Every structure is written in structure tokens, then in C-alpha cells.
Image (cartoon, rainbow, N blue to C red; front, side, top):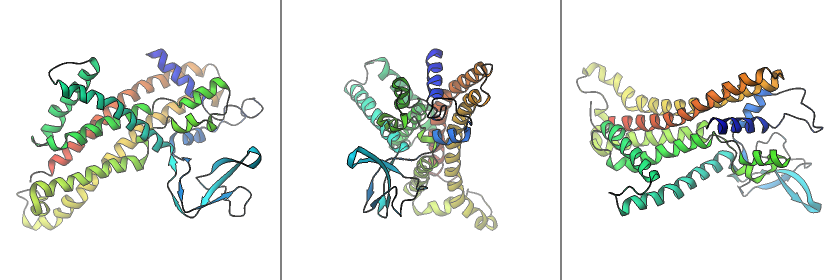
Length: 338
């Protein structure tokens, strides 16, 4: 296991895009912030625009600062850069492709396992199905049902899917880009590899748009469950029972509006910060090797990065568990008046 982790970290080191310049010599300036930006920030990989017009490099409307610049082969097998002007952009980004990969992996893995279990629930078909049943049973008995007061059955499907989606998004983000590793072996430019664009190795849950969407689903469930279980009385019942009437006008906006939004905000920041911090620390530790250019720093950087990498594997499971736990707790708290 340790050897595999060291190999992954070594591959990650070699996949840095600016270790050498075009002449093959070491770059004079090592841009660690640029490296971190490259590995953490999202950008468009595959063009998808409806109603726009392509503007090529050299045209008067071409904007070099456009965040969505693509390349294509034109006449004479010449590669030209372009971007779209106008229309509706729906470009496929690195995080979108990684989410598709995670979704495809979950479908091809859990659907056959679910069918095997459903055909004979009393039989242990394999170690894998046994492990799945163990995890689901633990989530059901120890996480969902206690926090939803025994009414968690309608939410099993969503919460189980939420847990495994976040878990594998976290874990897949720890695997370096397949295209960059192959390009390292073949000596090609990794940034033009289709494999690099498909599997970028980026952590999906390290993007605020993803975490805020997941937290927004929890916010929707909080209000939807409250009205489903309490009806229109959910609006006044959001204030705890026994609160003196003079305090009711002050507590109602806090409990009905601000509190659910604060819960969703906490879910957003917690997952985002935890899944981003570890990657930044790993990149910083590995960057010390190229910043100081000393063999003495190599064991320290590799050892520290390995320790953080192991911690990140643990954090990947913990954050999926905590997000599911808090979602169950927040949604369950809106079922009844307190």
C-alpha cells in the first residue's frame, strides 16, 4: 500500500507542467501558486455552445483572457486557438467529466450488486456485496433512523446515494491524471491528451459549485420535510415550544430562515475546505523539492506528503459520513416541533 502511494506521489511530482522549459533544462522560476491553481481550479475542456460564433486567434474580437479557449485543427493541419462569442455556453469542464466518471462507476458497480442482493437477501453473494450491506446497514441503523426518529425510510435512497457519491468523488480526486502519467512515460505533452481531459484527477468536492448544490439539496429537504410532516403549521412551529411570546418575533426569522441557510452554508464550507486543504498541503510539500532544488529536502517532502495522503484517504471517508450524518440530523429536526 505504501509503495503504491509513493508511486502515485512520484507520478504527481512528474506531472507538474513547468518542471522544465522547452529546451529541457530546469525552469529558473518555480511557480508554486500556479501549480496549485492548475491542480485545484476548474476550467473548460470540451466546447459546447449554443448559438455562438467561433472567433479564432488573430481576429479582432479574440480575447486572450477568455477562460474558455479551445484548439482545433483547421486547413493545412494547423492548430488554431478559438473561443465563442455570444450564444449560451455549456462547456464541459474538468469537474463535470470527473462527476460523470464517478456516476458511471457507481452505476456499473452498485446496480449489479443490488440485483444480486435483491434476488436472495439472505445469502452472502460475495465479499463486495457483504461490505455494501454492512455499510448500508450501519448508515441505516446508526445514522439515518436515530436522527430521523424512525421516519428515515423515504430518504434511504437519497442519503445512501449522497454518501457514496461524495465518498468516491473524494477518493477519485486522490488519483493523479491518467493522461499525465501516460504522457510522462511516452514523453508527450499531457495537456493535449484526451485522457488528461477526461480524467483530470481533480477533486469534484473541492469546488464550491458542487458543495453548494449538495447543500442546497439538503436545504430543500429541510423545508420540504417540514411542510410534508407538519403542514402549514411548520411556519409557526419552527420556533421551539415554550418560547415566551415577546421573543417570538425575534426568534421566528432566526429559526425559519436564517438557521436552515446557516446549516446549508456550514455543509458547503465544511466539505469544500476539508477536501481542498489536504491537496494544497500535499502540493506545497512536493513543491519544496523544486523550490529549494536540494536532495536533502526530498525525504522530508515525500514523507510529509505520504502522511498527508494517508490522512486524506481517511478524510475522504469522514467527510462523506459527516455530510450524510448532518443532512439526516438537519432534515430530521424539521419533522417535529421541538
